[in-house]
Structures are given as C-alpha cells and as structure tokens.
Image (cartoon, rainbow, N blue to C red; front, side, top):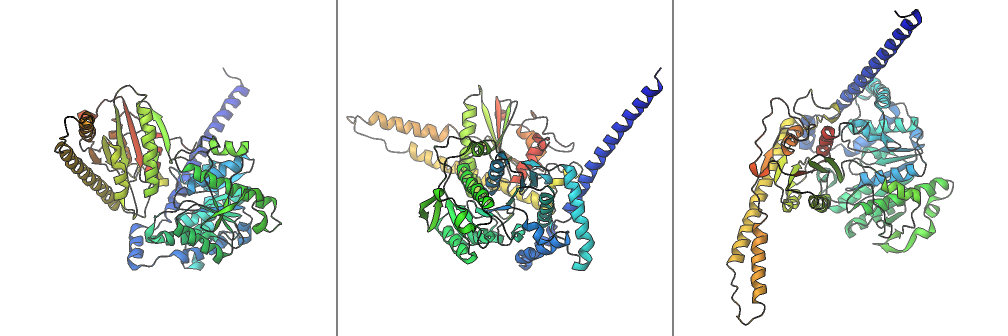
Amino acid sequence: MFSHSQLLKMVKTVLIQSLKSNNGQRMAKTYEEAVRTLNSLQSNAETLEKIRASGDQPRGRNLRNMEKFILRSGLELEDVDKLSVIHISGTKGKGSTAAFSESILRHQGYKTGFFSSPHLVEVRERFRINGKPIAKELFSSKFWHVYNKLNESKVDYDGLMPPYFAFLTVLSCHIFLEEKVDVTILEVGIGGEYDSTNFIRHPVVCGITSLGLDHTSILGNTIESIAWNKAGIFKTGVPAVTVEQSPEAMMVIQERSVEKKNPVYVTLPLPDHEKITLGIHGCKQRLNAGLALQLCKIWKNSIAKKDIDMNTNCIASEVLSKSNICGIPVLNIDRLTDEEKQGLSECKWYGRNQIVHKPGITYYLDGAHTKDSMQQCVSWFNELSQAEAENISGQVVKVLLFNVTGDRDVVPLLTMLQPINFDAAVFTPNLTFTSVDQMHADNVNRTVSDASKQRRCCLNKETWDKLFQKQTECKTSMLDCVLNKDLSVNEDNNNDVLSRNAHKNSVISLTAKDKPLVSYSFPCISSALFWATQGLDSSASIESESEIPDIPKTFRHKAHIQILITGSLHLVGGTLELIMPNLND
C-alpha cells in the first residue's frame, strides 16, 4: 500500500513527465511546421524557368526590397546598424574563412553570431551562436514572429513576401539582435552587389576570398564580372581585405575600392613558421586562415578605436607591409596569440574536407563544385586516402559518389576525378530518399523539379562513362605506341639495359591499374550509399521498393571501402544526414 503523500508524488511525477513529453513533441512539430512554411517561400521550378526564359533577372529589385522587408518585420534600419558586422564574399573559401573568423573571435572571449549558407542537414545551422546552431525552440519562436509580421503586412505590398534566402537574412538580424552578440559574421549568399545580405549599411570590415567562375548565369562569365559583383559589398570608409587574385580581378577590386571610396588591402597565407594544424583540412585553408586573421584584427582594432577615423587607425602600423600586389598594399601576419592559434586549430566546418570513419568504411566529404576547389579536393583525397590504405591489411576499394547542380559544367570536374582510378562511380540527385514522407523537411528543394534532378544525374553518369572510355582508348593508343617503339640500340651501348627496363616499366604503368567501368545512377542518396557500402553501414538503408544492382565480384568483401562524396554541398549534407544523424545535437 502507498501512503497518500506517496501517491500524490507519483501522480505529480507522471504529470511532469507527460508535460515534458507533450512540450517536446509540440516544439518538434512547431519546428517542422516552421520549416514547411519557410519552404513555401521558395520559388517553384516552373516560375524560375519562366524568369530565365524572359531574361527578367530580379537582382537589384530584390535588394531594393530588403529594406522594406526589414521595416515590415518590425525592425528599423538603425536597429540593424547596431550589429557589428564582418561581411565576407568570394567564390571559394568564404564559408571556411567565416568559420575561422568566428572561431578566432569566440576563443578571444567575444559572443559570436554567424550567418552562412547553405545548410547541410537542418536550416537552423545557418544561424550559429558561439559556434553552435541555434536551438529549434529559438528558431521556431523567431521564425513565427518574423513570418507573421510579414504575412500580416503583405496586403499593403501587393502580396509580396521575401524569397527564401531573403527571409532568412531578415531572420538573422532578429536573432542576433535578440541574442546581443558582440560580432556578426555575415557570409554572402551569391555574388555581393545584388546579394540579399548587401543591405547592411555599416559593416566594420569586408573580406573577399578566392575568386573563380561560378554562378555565371547570374554573375557573368568573366573573372572581371565576378570580381565586380563580389566587391559590391564594399562600403565608403570601411576597410576591406582580399587574398591575392589574378591581375584582372585585382584591377577590378582596386577600381571598385576607388569607386566606393574605401581602403583595400591584400593578405598573404598563414606563414609556414606558424606550425598549426588547422581545424579545416585542405591545401587552400592556410590562405583562408590568413584572411580570417586579418579580418579579426581589423574588427578588434576598429571596435577599440571606433571613435577614431577608421581609414588611418584600424590597420596597425606594424602589419602594414611596404610591398603591394597590383598596387594594393599588403598586410603582414604578425606572431599569433594563443587564442588565435586555438581558434584556428579547433575550428570545425562540416562538409569541407571532412573525414568520417566507420568500421570498414571511410567517408571523405567535400562540397567542391568549381574547377579550383575540385583540384584541391582531388589532391586532398589522393594524399589522405593513400596514407590510410598503406596502413590497411588487404585490398582497399575506392568509390566516387557524385552530383553537380545548376549551370555548372560537369566535364572539367569529372575529368579531374578520373585519374584517381575509382573502382566504381555512383551518381544520385540531392535527395536523401525518394519518399516525401521520409525526406527531411529542411532539405526540400522546390526550385528544381524531381524530373530535372534525375535527368541531371543521368547526364553526369553518361559524361563519366564517355570520359572513362576516352581515357581507356588513350591508354590503349599509348600502349600500342610503346610496344611498337623501335628500341634497337647498338649492342655496345651500355644504356641498352636501361632502355629496355624503361620500356618494360612503361608497359606496366599503362596496364597494371586498368579497371573495368563500373558506374550506376540511383534515385536517391540512401540507395547509392547502401550499394557503395555493400550494406555494411546500417545508417545507409534502402527504401522497400528500391532495386539495387548486384555488387561485382571484383568489388565484394574487400578489406576497406573509401568513399569520396563531392560535387555538391547539398549531396554532402544529404550524406551527413544519414551517417551522422546527431550532427547538430
């Protein structure tokens, strides 16, 4: 028998647990509802196709609307001006540079806010406070506050609501102001001049990472037009720093700084004498780390001297070099503090040169999608996968998991990947599952039709197969040339043996590593991973109605499988959703 007090205590415990459970379920549902409502702000594929066909690119019009969205959301522009912003544009490495900057300042004791894109698994990753994605509760609360404000006022604006990325940009201002962050690191979405983030009137410092040809249908197909757009974030009197670019790009950057009346500097990579293992891997990361250090130093100096003219006081005299690159002054990198070293070494930025180990499988993930970034990815994978294979007893199998989206030319990317000599290549759209019920709401993409995604996937596979056949024909031609080569040399020539050995080695090099073409396209990432891992990773399950090709005999039951996932950050994100389901916990 229980006493009256014991019974009351038991009932109270049950009620509390029930309330907690209901609240948890309600919050999870509210978050999912918020994400589904957010997805409704994506332009559907048909609408975008009509815009492209008509040539009516919104560009400047979207940016002009940003101030209206801010005001309609309940903020004044003067409120946004209170944010202390580091604004970063570029083609390659802007996410890594922003992540390094956030980590450096966080380790120096500042409360950081970081807005980035795209997200990998959940949309709340785009908003980070002190390096961590915001909680679902915070996202839901601020989302509904901002969405309801905009939705209620749309009657007075011809029903106009902000597009997906513009809405998230407005939302970031509300979140970072409410959280009272010391610094906001703001990563540009696309371009700079017309990007939704460029409504910021008074950033503290601007940065431009490495430039290359990407999003050419929007930004232009020359490096000069790309540079013009990226430097569009410059503001009068606000210092800017870039890494060394091509002479053509540097000239445009300098011209834009004259136009915008702001000082611009160039930084060198993190010097070799700083023996630091960076938290983000890759051969270009010392360049990104160098830029991040300069941005953080200027931000700190500007904050410390905000009542003094920034043009003459935000750059410490000891770091301003006497040299210049294309007429732009160079900034030296002085000795790093312990906090700066810790910030660089402990920085995490998933999906970029990331390695995930599982029993019998190693996933190499990198969202490279430009020629330069893919070359870096190939070098990184070759070096690390080879080092790993040398420490594994038995045969190691290499598999490529690939997708590319948008208007990007797939041929140069796949051409760079061919020499890795993969045992198999698999292609899939950026869909974790084909079933809508199983798909994560955060990764629904209405801007491209499912049929278009599948067509692009098949095209990628066809391109790979053609390149493979071309490479095989080239090797055969070279082999015939070597075999038929006239090696007749004078019998008295002491180099005769050396010549014959060279001939023998040439034949071996052309034939020893030849592998049959094994390539498949799959309807979704989960099916592709199930095949690539041979079912060894339980996180990569298949849908009940999926048909999975047989594993070739030469490919089965090997000691270890290495899988390179590249070509798209969304592909990397879908993979992480499966193999690291607790990524954001």
